[in-house]
Length: 190
Image (cartoon, rainbow, N blue to C red; front, side, top):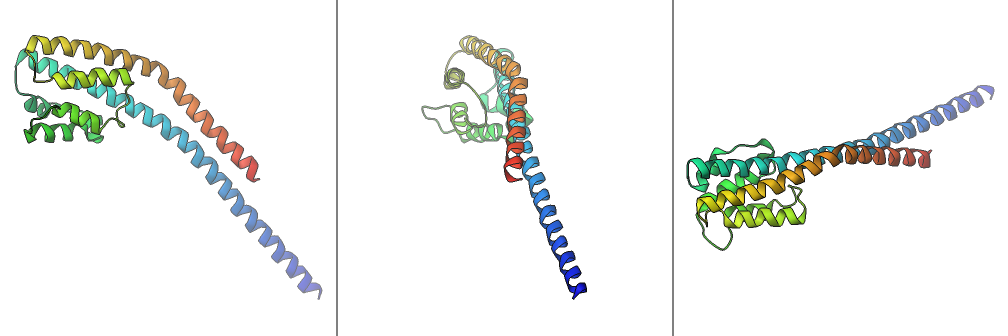
């Protein structure tokens, strides 16, 4: 009888330890998942800024090609490369749409800009300026096109500068909030 009581105490102790080990593992997992969420949000913001800078590089490339070489837009799009714009599908769609040759009220640039609007973070005013620029591509004389390029480049540079200044603060805030949320959940579930 004494041995069965001792065995029962050992079994209860073992069940108790297993329960707390599983609980601690789950709490640690919850904490690290919420922490990773904040880190991921910050990384997405950095990626969005790089995509916006890719649009800036594309427009600078368009300006340079129109100014010095006067080659067709489809060739300009093919000669440009940017990893961030490739990853979000912007460049591949732009090249495909420009090669289709379908002519309607929207240029290939505007169509692709609409399709990838969510992947490239822009304020509404900047989006309107870039869209208007895209609508004019290939539809005006080179001097006018270069002037429009300069105006859009200036707008994008201002937005990039603003985002670069805000990025460290936003990343720190997102990371802190996710860590705080993780700690709160751990405390609540203890």
